[in-house]
Image (cartoon, rainbow, N blue to C red; front, side, top):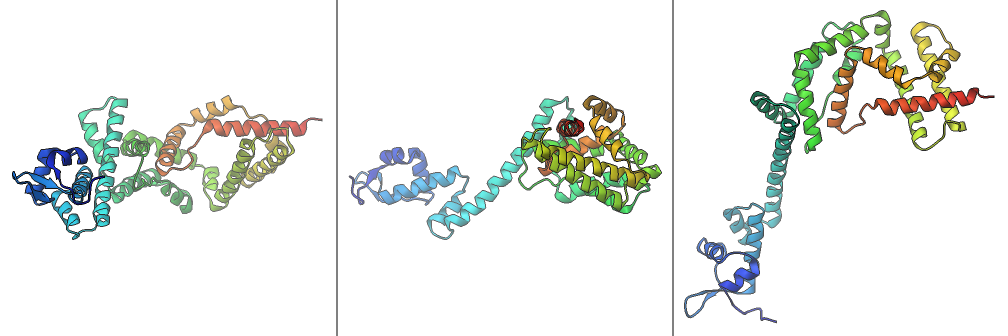
Length: 332
């Protein structure tokens, strides 16, 4: 084993460190890592300590550190930890920029994009939090202008907004690009506005938007999610657990409709659930002009926020399971 005081010629040092001979000379000339000694012929020689410093220099350079920063670390004027913190921040900023660029490029590849749209997409992914908030607020200002419903419901609509995380994925950035383009699009804005004004422009619609009915809707949704969890845990439709929760769903539906119409009819609610038809439900949704746009908005927001997305197929599967459970309950 070589001694700690052994000196190595520059060629050996180059092989040990992976640096070129010219790079080692450069670092010596710049005063970053001086040779330990000179041979009788004037050639540079390095001991193991100098070689270790050169290996550190190479690593720091690979990580993007500049010569002055490296000098500071080697002279103990800057700690390695502080340097790493600074460069980690720079690398994370660069990663965010690369993700944004990748999102724009993938969007360009996926659709026919004009030069003007490319510039817009880059602007959209580069928006500040305040700019994104302002864009979404302006959208809901337009949609809800003149909407004659309880203020609490309007506030709920405003709360349906994206919150792009500090370190978003490419999928989240792509969803933000699409959402930002949609809420700026006059046709989309007008269609969504028309949907809400049409749905809540009737007395029944206004009633739906009251705090009492919203609270009832929330309770019904919680019960639906319970049913979804039971189904997805593997409980068969003919199990006692399935029938019990299906009956509670029917009772909740009957209570909800009674609050809306004044008529309480549990048998009607049960028949409606038993008669659920996936295709008919899909056809009904398609006839509700503007509803698919609202669902698209909600899906994009959920993608950006990392929350559960609307899933009509999953919803239909739960409703079919509940219908089967009620039919089993009716069987002799």
